[in-house]
Image (cartoon, rainbow, N blue to C red; front, side, top):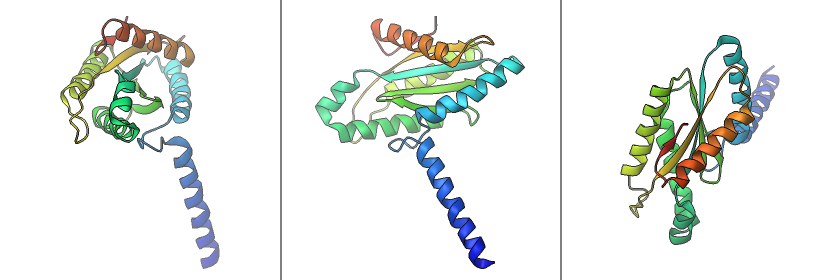
Length: 180
């Protein structure tokens, strides 16, 4: 019996480790794109049944290529980790943050209205703008694009809209939020 229990625990540990490795971005230790997509699909279906509003916040670090080129990829990686931690500290437990790719992050905010979403985004944007990153005291800013998911909205549509708005924010001077 002890051998069976030990074997069962080893299998369970392996399965849990595998799940973590497929759902978590290895650099920032936050959810990865795969987990975000899976979770959003479930949450959108729930929102359609309940009429709950979800918001998708897409953020991109402004001029990140310049940081990598000037300071090196190791410093760029540390900045990504620090941004990930700021995002973790800024959202509620029921919300989800994920590394979307490169220097882009995505946040799913549940049960949010326009005013509270804008307040959250500006709080994050201001915190990042005021912080000096790494021991090199690197200053940076972020831009946001926001889309609300209504009962008829699909994930791909919401992400496309948030992405369009993100690029509008960047084209309008960066370090800002575009919601409309």
